[in-house]
Length: 182
Image (cartoon, rainbow, N blue to C red; front, top):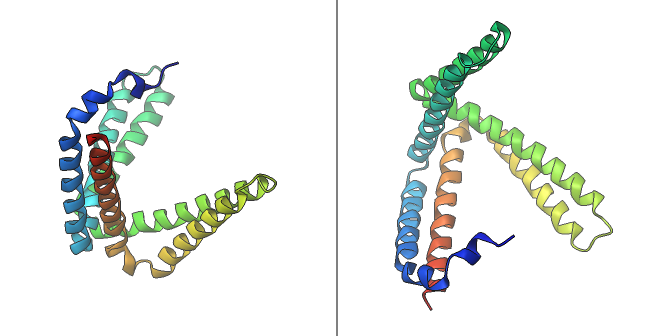
């Protein structure tokens, strides 16, 4: 099966290099702005998650009345209602929602790190298994550091993650655009 990128001629990408660089600069600048005000970036990220939850909840509710049987309708409707309520709470009280999301993030990092460490140890005879274990340990430590600073750090942790992601995505697009230019 052919790769998706094999279908796109290099010359087509080369002619669009300035768009990749422009997008990269825009994302990089947005990341720097977010880095300049982490609390505002946290609130923006909470609003974004809230919008997604509201949208998902409405889809669940619409789907609830498409299925047959009251037990299925009740399950889907209840799920949709919970999503809608969670989305509304993100808009009503973004600080409380950011605290909940930050705690969830710390727990997810710990669980993912423990799992990654376990997988790395299972790969022990393979070359490079230590990198996987090290990555897992760092992820666990990041989760614990976030959990130890909770709830005070919930005012800036999500904003920091957003800022770093925007900066990295911007840098990547700039590098890609300049790389395909020649």
